[in-house]
Structure formats: structure tokens, C-alpha cells
Length: 258
Ligand code: NAD
Image 1 (spheres, rainbow, N blue to C red):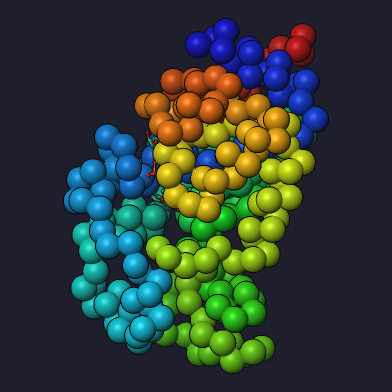
Image 2 (tube, rainbow, N blue to C red; image 1 turned 90 degrees about the vertical axis):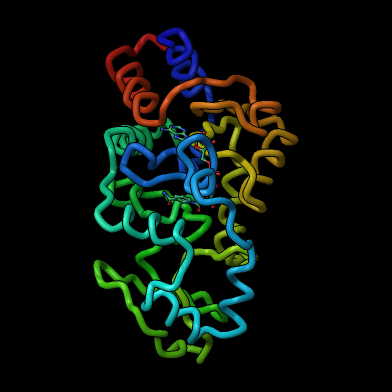
């Protein structure tokens, strides 16, 4: 393991533009379960219908009522509970230090928990949104919510009159154009990607790995089990997210011989 961490540190040192891409596995050690994998809530409850955006569009009022009255899937209940008091773990702070010291240029996360921002990371692209924000479906205006999460449908957008929903991207919902463009720009600039805790199955986010690979970007995968991504990764590190980032921070900052 030490040898692999040393290798990652060398690659980071040699790279011009390294990007970290994270999935639900990054936040498992903050108490938030992933969907897939051995500890996944879908593994526990079964995979839900993948049409939540079409349900929302059909009847936004019912969508909000269901959440308020808790008539929602068990897996959503469990995820909501775990998100309530979740805090960044040491790995999130190590990742923040890597960004601050310019070893990595940006973080593209599929997570909606906001833990990277909470840990202090700055150049964070939340490709599936942030649960503590609202977004207008027409003009993409975002509203930060802080600790207060609404339980009734918000008023239409004050700018364009569009429907306002939680910023988190539902199944079947397009990724907002500005976010997709920003993510693509980061991928196009990258020469190294460190992919942590993602099953690389949710499109279009996962497609970014294949685009990067086709452009010659090296991919390091960090996960507790092999995934679809392993077939195109340049190397696979079998590790939990927290210890990976903490070890990498120690390697980079305790040893300047890279
Ligand atoms: P996923 O649930 O499909 O896969 C999780 C991956 O993490 C698996 O490959 C698993 O082996 C790995 N993993 C589990 N524990 C780990 C650990 N401690 N360290 C490293 N890896 C670990 O997750 P995904 O690929 O991100 O895609 C699913 C979708 O789930 C995303 O769109 C995301 O928005 C949503 N999601 C987000 C959260 C969150 O915000 N924390 C939680 C659950 C689901």
C-alpha cells in the first residue's frame, strides 16, 4: 500500500492538471450509505424505479406532499436521516489540503451532501447538485438554504417564474447545462484523474471517465471493490476513501522527494 501511495504522489507531482472525481463511497465514512456495493441501500432495499424526475414534473405538489408525509421509499428515508448530521471526515480535510496546495485543481463530485464544501474545498463541481440548495428548472438560479430545508413547494422563481425544486438531480433529470459544461472543461484540461468511491454507473457523470481516457488522461481508481471503471483505469488501489487521502496527504507533506 505504501508503495502505491508513493506512486500516486509521484504522478500528482508530475501532472499538470489533476482532478479528483468522487462518488458516494467518499462519504460512507461520514455515515452516509452509498446506493450500490456491499453496504449500499439499494443492495439492502432493492433498486427503486428510476423515474423520479418524471414523477416530479407530473405533479410537483404531490412530490412535496410525499416528502412531508414521509410516504417515500425506505432507501430515501435512510439516506435523508444519514445526511442530517453528517460531517466531513479526515479524508475530506486531506483532499481540501491537496487542493489548497495545488496538487489537485478541482473536485467533481456526484455527492449531494456538500461535505467537500464543508471541509473547505473551493473548486468543487457538484454534478448532481447539493441538498442544501434550491434551483429553478428554467433559469438555473440557485438559492442556498443553510440548515432550513423546506417541506412545502417553494414559490416560483422570482426571476423567470419557473418551477423551483431541490438542486439535487433526480433520476431522469438532465444535469444543468452550466454544471455539465464546467465538468467537461475540467475533464478536457485534466491529465490525471483520481476516481474515489464511485461505481461509475450513473450517466452522464460516469461517461466523463471514458471521455478523459479517450483524451489520454491517466486514471487512478480508489475503491473497496472493483467496478466497471477498473477496466479502463491505469491502476486500482484497494482502499477506503478516508485512509487513502490521509495517507496521500502524509506522503506529500512529510516527504518532499517526489
Ligand atoms: P454508488 O452507490 O453507485 O457506488 C458507491 C461505490 O463506493 C461502490 O463502488 C463501493 O464499492 C464504493 N465504496 C463503498 N464504501 C467505500 C469507502 N469507504 N471507500 C471507498 N469506496 C467505497 O455511488 P456513485 O457511483 O456515486 O453513484 C450513485 C449516485 O448516488 C450518485 O449519483 C450520487 O448522487 C448518489 N448518492 C450520493 C450520496 C451522497 O451524497 N453521499 C449517497 C448515496 C448516493
